[in-house]
Length: 471
Image 1 (cartoon, rainbow, N blue to C red):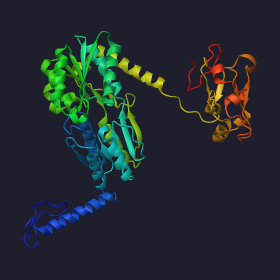
Image 2: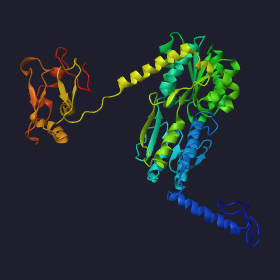
Image 3: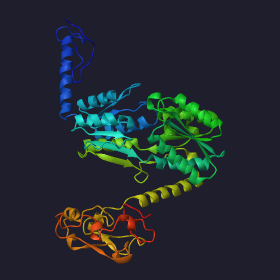
Image 4: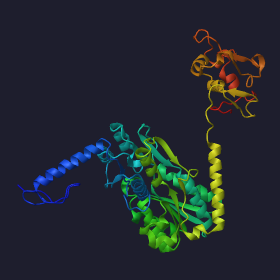
């Protein structure tokens, strides 16, 4: 029988069957199935590499978050010489649907497989466990700790802070707006950064904030009409600059801003240069960028070219250029006063980050001076490991862990014990590690004085540990 559908098998000349010269012959169908099976086997063996990309709510064409991921896929395909497959989400889909989507990509040999958006967290975790030799990536989530998963996250609050500075220096009505897609912690970061930027830049400016929905399933990231309605309300209430972090819904915010001839601030991608938003571009002041494209490209390159897949948390920030503001709009770029204020704000963010960054860990034997208000001498890493004020750290256990000669050393405990017969008493490290010979805690080493008798005494001079502050 010559039944089947007309098709053209990859690598097979587009000719008909040798017997009947019909392109829909079942013989050719079986040949195509054989070719496809060999192709799939090659992918599973690693002979054919490609990138699998699963979009978030809103899908490709949102001119924002998903399109940024697609731009990274396109760049990887071009620069790395590989193919890629991108898959659209479905309405009201479950975590099981997302898991099946990722597993289908992994089974077909795509590596890496990337879930775009925090909603893929359960699916990535499950799929990564089933395919340990495949590298998975997830954007905007850092809760997965598997060795074959890269958690690609960003300091969105930093670019949003700069957006707040811009809005505060641009508004004439002293009222600005923020529209969030869904009321979730990720979007809270956008709002918090924006509000703080406004507050630090110009006093008296009011920020009107609104979230479109409580869950993504209700359409907060995929409903331009909801975004437009929210922006209309804020503009009618006096806002003349509106910042949207709402995915596809942000297009409605930009449309509303253009209709009312006020400024809009885009998000994730440079929306001033988006073709679908070209008619609104005179009213797109700038966009708070998040280099999702770079994250997709870097992970793909690490797997396909470098052969050293990224894993763990990979965080983009202002310091490494992964977040910032777009300067495509000449009105924004040529405003000297605004640009000077933004440079100052950027420097402040970098300084604050460097000050808040925890110090590098000490190695045994290395010393770091303690702050003068705490102590006048230095403390070695071994002594700090005991915690100096750690009341429950067995000395012998610490000595065994460090492997140093700390058994011969002492901890000066007199800095916080300057009363009565306990003044300037030292706690020796015992040579023996058996429970019968070593002091179990700092209490036994200083005469078993109760904690409340000195820790709570306001007159006692005390030293604070790195993990416990004095009261």
